[in-house]
Image (cartoon, rainbow, N blue to C red; front, side, top):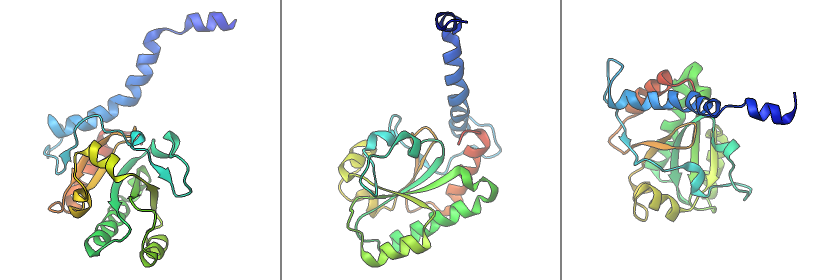
Length: 200
């Protein structure tokens, strides 16, 4: 069959079918929070306004190269931010995120812990701790002003409030958790998301 014949055999609906097959399970996960579908239909996290895309945040790997779609897509993420220093609350949050992933047991490979550094000059002592105790975090360098604008925070507000975010497998930042939310709250939402979607 010629290349032209192959192209003629490809129908537009096939493309939409492929898109629907990938996106529908994630849409179903969102639906569980808003319309029901499980015994407990009230999400613990707060929705992030639509359209915040991780790939638009100009992230760089620790070696200075631009983060790619291949690196950022394909898994669910728990995302957290820090400046050069990490105080007690910050360290407690990072520890909590690590424990949340561990608690997912066989589902844990579907979630990736994501630590965004707003300052490349990380405190030397804490840098060693990250590398030894929190090696299961993917780490990137980001611009505070870019995230503040996209997520509607001011200055250090996001760090001071120790906000944790959930990012879906196609890079959408979808839920956020402030200090009054517990690990149990986050795990509850994660389990429902994973149950609703086989993507990631």
